[in-house]
Image (tube, rainbow, N blue to C red; front, side, top):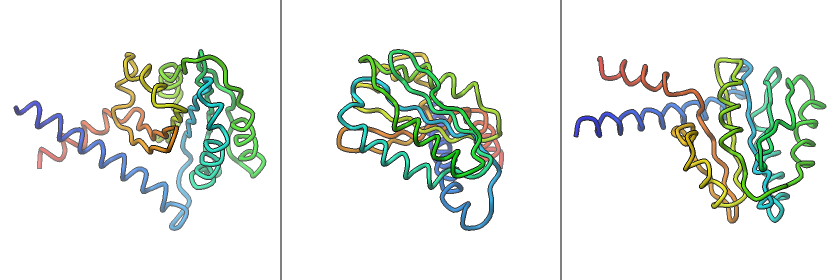
Length: 190
């Protein structure tokens, strides 16, 4: 019983930390320039993308306009049969932002099973700054089942899903477990 309560408390703290982190992104341009972060975009590169690619591309590009700041390091993965990085670069100009958007527009779907697990694992290990923002785009509900049944399912532990008619966007809090545990320990030691 106590373990279940502790796990639920850790989960709630994790959700609160993720929400606070996302809120920081939404208000940071209003108050001050924030420190550069790592931005990871993991996009379903399977054949499921074909029917929803334009909608996803428009939504992701709008989201990028809201998130990106000068100095951010952006990695874009195509999660096709095997995940592969299709763009890496530091955001220093409008041309850099346009190059990221072009890599997303030019993404060519291939295969049937997206490799989200490989991309999430790579994104978690490539973190160069203290903070990251990871956005995973799944072109179909079935596409997420592969990552949920894999050893990397724990990487989705601190995530938030936004559902659309035929696709999903997940904001994933990578590498948050130790921060959540420290926060929970500090909270319970009061």
